[in-house]
Length: 451
Image (cartoon, rainbow, N blue to C red; front, side):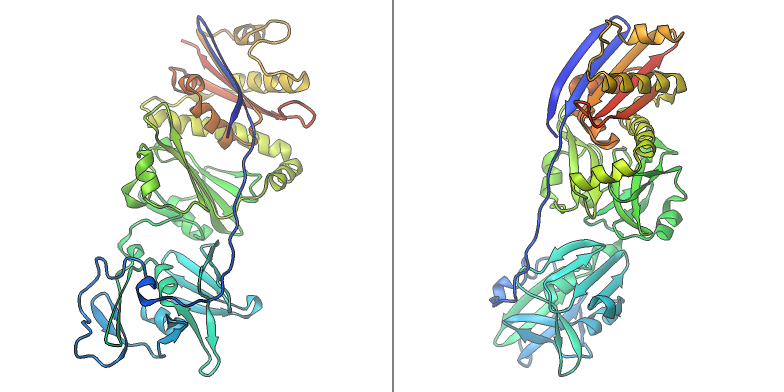
């Protein structure tokens, strides 16, 4: 998000910074009909790190299948379609301990194994994994009408559940080796995060989440079409988990306790994260330019509503959302402070009242500045309310549509970042919205140090 205006001002006992920002977009996919694939193109990384058993020498022509070094036999035949190897879906799933359900209402097949639930549409290249839409770029699930069995390309069937696939062929003998799945070894994959020793993933049920992390400290409404389950009992493991239809549909985390795939986490270098090959469709990573371009937050969402849809959702529940944004700013700030070895700041109702009053004044009178039109600064404003502190610090933001984005903007600005990490005792946040004003959304952080 590109900041529009930045201003930093310091006087004794007062640190002030201000920021204005504006929006961002999305992507789409396309179905491709099954095509001819030559054997050496069929599976990338064929045979890498997989068992050596199953040498083609002495075998009859055909396809031979190995799972974790053992030869396996399916109850239904393996088939070739347009040069590509297809597995019988139900037979394969039963072999690896997955549950298969025919969903007649959706003309699709649902498969569940460990933390993964996949739904495949009939005669379609589109499918979902834990609610995230994916595309078989050059293939599709199909039904063999003669034996009434669903078939899926081996690559997509195996890799959907985290298996590695290797391929080799000699003298009309095809050897396919499937390696163990990372999920069964407790490793992390895309759209998953470990926090407090527990794994959270897209598609996880509400019951599973509560069993892992307990009941949330707070449940906040959002403009993303889901509720945030907020876990803030320990800011080292702070996380907000999005819940929709009793399933995890997203998460946001900026705490030092986060764990991601490939052994990455808070403070990981940008190059490491980019090299890990995370899903760009669902996962967004934020890096701190003032801390060596290291990872400081991750936002994962199965679906992201358009800006218009988010605004409509906000308009239906504006007051409730603004109060939620205020508390989220407090939580995210404290997680950021703890990650950098600073103590938490305490919530101050007096600072919060002052922050909200100032956010409203700026929206009503259409300005964004630390100084009021009458020339009053943050110190003047608080002392006029009878609140006398040793130190006052203030961060302002305009144009950000929620607390997470406002906090991202503040971290990206060196002066605002410094303000959040300075030695302070109390924090109050005010969030205000006015459709006809210049910036529409106004955020104010007021830090106070009393002794």
